[in-house]
Length: 467
Image (cartoon, rainbow, N blue to C red):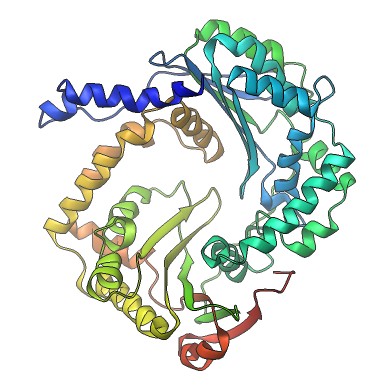
């Protein structure tokens, strides 16, 4: 059954070899979101259904108001609660769930991100009546087994300590905490050693009771099914899930304009290279200039042939790769420039990255470069949504971030509508140049004096288990 997952790519290859529209026509119709149905159950659960019959698979995605911004004083609580859905249910033991999913070749995963908990599953369409009731049980009637909880807790602590051996895995968490401070958006999704150590089984149960509710949550299914039949099945399964008072999303204070550049130096005594992020606040997912920002960021650091990668990798040899990115969420977002380099070339690499950013502001971009970025983004866009799992996730994101199909259907029009004159306004407004925030992970004894010029410095050790 698992071999079915290669079929979407295989079918695309056959279409290409047979001379499909993408290969044969210079003018290709803009991608449009396939037809779907949306409805809301009496308990407030929002459901999206999208038929896709190319492959006999169904993909299930779900979002709940249970991300890390709801963790409170115990970072990682949302992550741990999502993990605990695997511990068993009132009707199915953990072993029975694993045996059943393995027998039918079904996949199930649950995790927390910043603003929501996410659940994803895939299974053969013929097995929907067997698999969907188990998924429903895992979401609605989990049991929080103490033995499994203690085992997962010890593994989580080990994973957190091991992650710090790879700075690239943890630097974004350091950056978010440094930028947002005590704001909930600074809470590390996976928690810290000290916060996970303090979490009890009752903490998980209380978090689940408050945050795993139908109202404020959404389910999306995309794949090989009949919409009317699936609507009936989902309604029967989830209608008895009791509606509760929705958890209060933490109030995000308006992002104050940063008054100065700051630097967080995370000491790693055995480091032979420095991993760094340079950045600031970014944009929300709902920002009307989101697509224009993406076009320009493609030029700065969003693709392999970007300015940052050319300068830091190709021309100077400081690194194997450099990039810039906007991480856009519902209520906030970040902009970062990221790479890694040898300890000895840390300052030259940072200076060069800043020089490239300055070039964007002072010289802007020309028509040829803008056209290239537009074509790149338009070419990359349709393949993002060629599979049912990607489409199910897209529908969930539409719910979480409160946008509709116009974002998809008007994508190419909005890309093409970005003019050279407009790029100047976008660069000045959204690409931070002053009062940047720096986070470096490396050998502090060799870096401290050299990097002090970038801003007011704070130094911590990577072994600090509270960060």
